[in-house]
Amino acid sequence: MPVRYAAIDIGSNAVRLLIADILEKKDEVVYTKNTLLRVPLRLGDDAFIDKHISVGKFQDMVKTMRAFRNLMDVYKVTDYMACATSAMRDSDNGAEVVKACQKEGIDIQIVDGGIEAKIIYNSYLSSTIDKTKVYLYIDVGGGSTEITLFANGELVDSQSFNLGTIRILDNQDEPETWDKMRRWVKEKTRGYKNIYGIGTGGNINKLSRIANEKGDKPMTYAKLKAIFDHLNSFSLKDRIHELGLRSDRADVIIPASEIFLTIMKVGHLKNIVAPRVGLVDGIIQTLIDKNLKNNKQN
Image 1: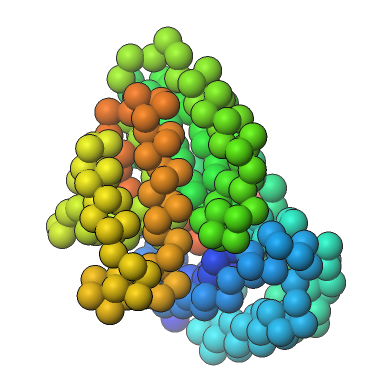
Image 2: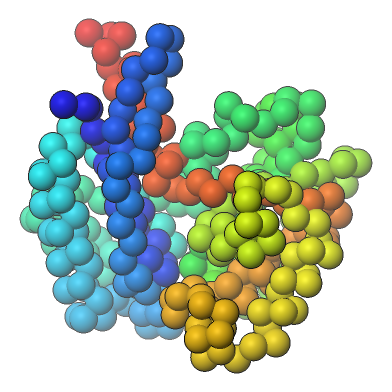
């Protein structure tokens, strides 16, 4: 029976469960994705407008965690980690939701943007970035955008902004936040010649799939802008029926594109690549690192 870990990402748009098989290969521990579930709860709609998770969404969240706990038991998961991000951070009853889910056997950590960025960095960047290049790592979620600058293989600076797809759709984004983000990107990228973008989140993954049928080829600003203009020329209804986008992707992909395009333009990014990893991948890697450390100590 393989060792299995689980990762739960409670985002502003969707809640995800990843169950991964952990495999030991010579000197390293790797994982393969066994099961990935996504439930479009849209907690952000409540959190960003009312600063409170409604009774209906509260109940749906508890039911979802109960289902996840049951699945984890069936798959005989030996370790797990559940992280909640922007929507739960912004809700005045986030702690109550955590308490209710605890009764279902799921312990949830509400993490800030900085920790969120570090966990995702764990999943991909630490092992794959070219130490000689400069990267701007951008993670766009439903409630916030995390931007991290890497140079010479080192994390130079990182910042979280209250700009996300659900927040923008609900008209809860502030012009000052956009300005603050532009200023930060301009200031941090000044002095670097060639900067490459790395984007994470469901929307950039989808945009990358639209741009490239095969592989995760980098997209230039012009390519991304052309895709955005094409998508934006359709109504929401037509993006679903004619372009075949899921209903909970068809609306958020527009504000997500606007965030990525803004950052690429201000930071003069050569291109952006979507490695198609996210918080759940980072959580699995975090669990692997934690258990390796514990095993060495025992």
